[in-house]
Length: 250
Figure 1 (cartoon, rainbow, N blue to C red):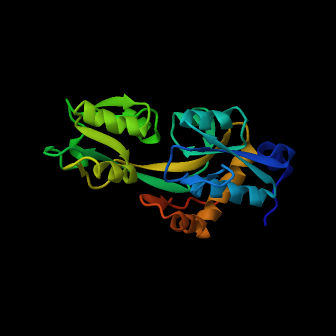
Figure 2: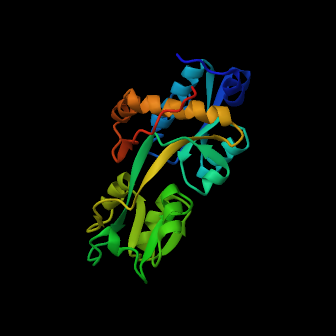
């Protein structure tokens, strides 16, 4: 194991405990709970791997909203937080490179004339979307003509799509597959409008720690750990992120 500076341990795990926040609503990365109620899945296991590398105990915090996850790191309540990286969120915290990417696409109703993702961003097109999700933040920045119609959860966005007879439903591809099974005649468009990068965030002032965490991400991908966790939890629509140059500090 490489040398880990006292500053890193002090920043991430004061009192010998790494507090780590994960978003319970991401059903691809947090797939359940243990008998003791602790979150389980790819994201919690990544937290465990970091705690092991630090040689400290782990305290997992399961958050109901993504804003809560981000704030836990921004405030220093948690040493790390695992959430979708986004420029808006990066104003509050610092992100590592991604450890996985999630495919995001659209579902369209039966008899829709839309057959390609490029046809969605047109005047008059209304899209149901989970407000402030990572893919919604991307759509807010990138859509030029279509209109987003927001809901406060994934389930609510599915219901809104049906209730309001909207033109498209945005979401993670795995979630759209489940939605399509309940909406006769609906279709998921091929491809993706973006790949949502899931990364590790920490407090902006933790300069030494972001180097350490970025090195962890590199090692977890290159060693095959990320792919092993994807297989372990049998999730679809998730892929190990491309490798970035390894940090010089660890």
